[in-house]
Length: 426
Image (cartoon, rainbow, N blue to C red; front, side):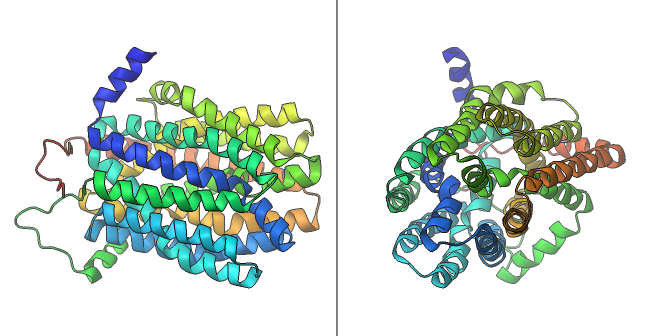
């Protein structure tokens, strides 16, 4: 096992591992808070899931959508590093304000304004991974990123669940310290990786950079993939937005026991992600995505059919297997679609896969849970998951060969940061 990890470590540059370390510490702070955020809102402001869902809608439309779009363009125009630092600082500020503010209406305003700057970091980080890693290693790189993320999720919910039972505010204060520390670390130790333009290529103006989004939207194959992935994510995000409240209110599951379920998910990814990544290497990518979405449909619908904790754990295992199939394949496909000088904008548009579900998913789930049998929520999730399965299968039949060509066709454009002059290290 150690020998395999040693080989894996040597595949990538030092700068890639610096990025992974910074990402792990940053995501650890987020993992302390996010799984318990709905619990925090309902408890602090004494509101129902409909209000919480409305808050997620505001956050997604005013902050994630604007911040993600702004972040993708700025990452291509000015570079990845500056965006990441701004996002970390905004994350620290927002966490502090969430402790201080006691009025639900003001809370809405904070989510909308601060989140714009917080979310500009996402496309920059995804683009930086593609900058640092040659094409043939990207599935492994994004698989490793999933492991790093889930290592944070192993410890975050365990710690967060224990702390949340006594003091929610301590979670947010911890994130303030963590985000601030990572911003300093990134400033001193992480290089800029924005690919430089050729000698005869003119530098884009700000207006031209934003206009480039039109080129992304005209990429019909990419946009079809985004739409189907959006449906699949609409199911998946219920794990981190709705499931905690459902298990608490319907099955009396405490925050710490919910944290154990999330940690089970994370531990599986940490130890098995690379195995599943290698298993699907060279397989038809859209068929892999379809099978993963099928597992989502099965796993999430189980929360409506069963009431025992052991079945909740079984459902989480099924969901996690689907996640390990979907995540690295999807991220590698997106990176392959994007030209070098447009990676930030492609990553930003792909952010719709998460933004739209967060805008409508929790609100829809809240309406169902507050006005109907809460179990209906998970039957609806299963149906949407099956629609996503059909979408991926349709894309495979209609354009499977084109997807494989796009995935393999860019491999001659390799970027190795420490040797290639096309990448600026500042």
